[in-house]
Length: 102
Length: 384
Image (cartoon, rainbow over all chains, first blue to last red; front, side):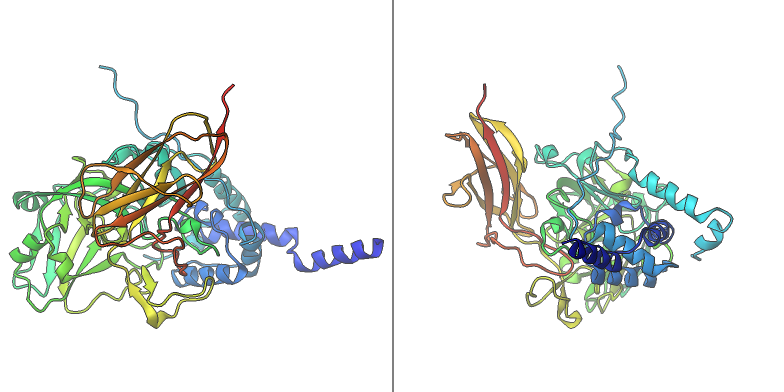
C-alpha cells in the first residue's frame, strides 16, 4: 500500500511541471502575450497541449517574441488545459455615466 | 511597426512586470459607454451582452456586444475623415463625411452576430473567444448604399469583389483587417456604409463609417472603413483565408481542418436563443414567461417553438411583429409549471426558407456558426 502511494507520487512528480517552471511560464505569459492583448484572452481558453502549441506557433508568426516557450506551454496546460473547468465569466464595471441632474 | 518590447522592458525587472500585468488583468475595468458586460478581453475590447439585456427589439448601443480583432484606431476626426475608393473604377474618389451624407440615406434594421457566437458551447473546446449567447445584437443602421458610392466611382463591370479596409492596423506582425465582399452582395440595396447606429455614432462600433453587410457574419461588417477597392480577385489576407472559413465537409470533432476544403462564410444560419429564464436560474412556482430572440441571416423568422419538457412536446411561441430579412424577432411563451422541480427548456426556430435549427451544431475547428437548438435548465421552487 505505502509503496503504491510512493510510486504514484513519483509518477506525478515525473509528469507535472515543477513549480519553478510554472512560475517561469507565468512570467513568460506576461511578457510574450500582453504587448498585443490582455491576459483575459488567455485565461478563458481551455486547450490541449497540442492546441496551445498551435496557438503559440500562430502568435510567433504574428511577431510575439516567446523566450521560454517550454515553460510557457507547461504553465498554459497546467492552468488552462482542456481538462480544467471553464472560468466563471468576468464582468466589466458600469461605464455608462449617470444622467446629469436637470 | 517595429517590435521593441524586449528593449522597452530591459531596464525593468522582468518578473515584477509580469506579476503586475497578471494582477492588472484581474482587476475589474469599466468600458466607457457600456453597461456591465461579460468581459472576455479588455485590450482590445471583446464584450458580450448578458442575456438579461436582450429585452428590446433594438439593442441599445450601451448594451451592444463588441468584437475587436486589433486595437481600436485613434478616434477619427469627422472633419479629417476620407474614404478612398479605388481599384477597378473609372474615377478614383476621396470622399469626405459630408460627401457621404449628401448621398441618399437608407435605414436598415439588421442583426449582427459574431461568427463565433456560441463558440463556448462546442466540445471539444476550440481556441478563440468563448462567447456563449450574447455576441449578437439588433440595430438600426443608417447611411448611403455601397452601390451608390461604387456608381459614383464608375466601377468596372468586370470587378468581382470589393476589398474593405478599416483604419485599425495590426500590432507587431499581426495582419491588417481587410475583408472582401462579392460584388453582388456589395451592390445589394441593403448593403450600406452606416454613418449611424440607433442614431448614434459610437467610436467603439466603427464610426464615423461602418460597412453593414446584412445577414452575413459580423466580421463582414468592417469598422472604421477608410478604403474600398474594386478588385477582380478575393483578398487573400489572414482574415479571409484561413480566418473566418468553415469546413465544406463536416469533420469529426477534434480533428484539424483541411485547408483546401475551407470556404468563406456568407449568410448566417437559422438560430434562436433563450434569454429568460437564464440557465441554472431558480424561479418561483407560478406563471412564468420564457423569452428569447431568433434570426436567420438573409431570411426572416417564420416560427419559434418552445419545449418545457426537454424536447418531448413543443408549443409555438409568440413572435414580435416585424418579419424582416436580416433582423431578429423576439419571441415569448407563457408557461405555468404544474410542479416544482428541474425543467429543461428548449427553443427551435424555423425560417422563411424552411431551415430548422438542428439538435447538434456541427463541430468545426474555429468554433463558428453555433446554432443548435438552445436549452437552459431551470429549477422551479415552491414558495413558502
